[in-house]
Image 1 (spheres, rainbow, N blue to C red):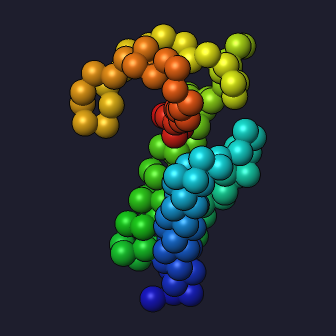
Image 2: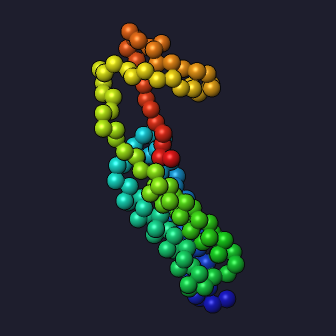
Length: 133
């Protein structure tokens, strides 16, 4: 086996580890409701991991180095795509602390109907979170 194929194989595994690491960090931040408004650093990290996966094939790899490289490329392409097709935007008239709750009907976590009118007259904290997609 040539040194180039060894390098290419390592690049494939490094690409996958990097992609998984960035995805895990993304979901951790989403869980903490701490995703930044500017997601450029995430995109740069995903592009870097995908480029490592592509470099794996340019350098040359063993078959088992190509599998993680393809995985990294697919994962990174998916994440970059979801970032750009679903930007988070703040509404023109967001609800603020102390505002009267707007009337709405939705399903709760148990699939039961929830009507915001049931909360009138009671202090309530409502957290709307849609992650990224």
